[in-house]
Length: 260
Image (cartoon, rainbow, N blue to C red; front, side, top):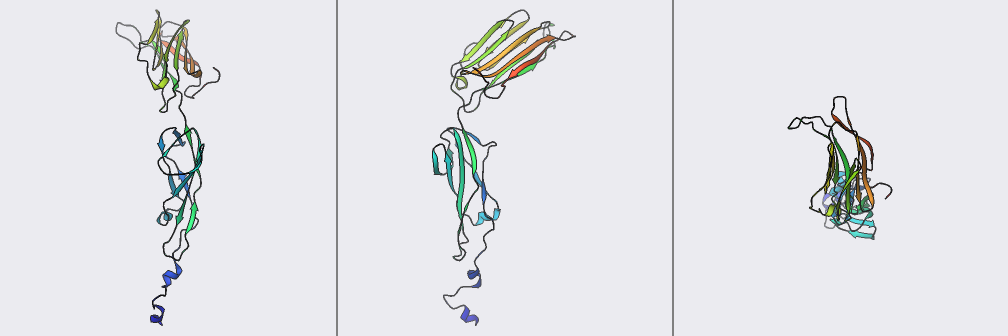
């Protein structure tokens, strides 16, 4: 009986049974950035995370389908981000035992979404430094307010204008192409007995020596947009040391402000 069961052309018990594929197949598209935002013009990629790690032993190479501003398409990695907008990625793959008995199955992942981000404006932030330390010659260190300009990786080609104002005096510094290039020229400067200020490609600074009661103003524009603005107040304290505080700030590091 055993010999008869193994004659040529017959199948073993294991072959007749086949293998067992992992139950409940599936997976998710994963991205390396959180949130998944990628600059237009750059190459990026994503991964496929199986719901069950054992699926990787049965799955073929995934095929990626992408739907975005240019319409649906089949893509390979790395993907070159062509335009601003929202992109949705799904993967599908075949899982097989390869035993000729168990039917293959096709699996589709849950979608993943990323954003193509266009050229970004600069950002601005104010740093405060309190006065009071001794300088050479016996003078006290002035209080200072400093507007810093930050440039993103994907930079907008538009004029960048830095403004500082105190005691009715105003100075400006302008980069014609914003964060894409520096003017490499001398900074703008104004000064008086109790205060001084300067502005250049990297920001603006106001220094005030005690005793003085003054209000200063900063503004950063990219093109026609106000990106950051702040009012700062200088006052001496009871010990005669000049102090500085922020009276009002708007849109710091946020990318844009309402109004022109």
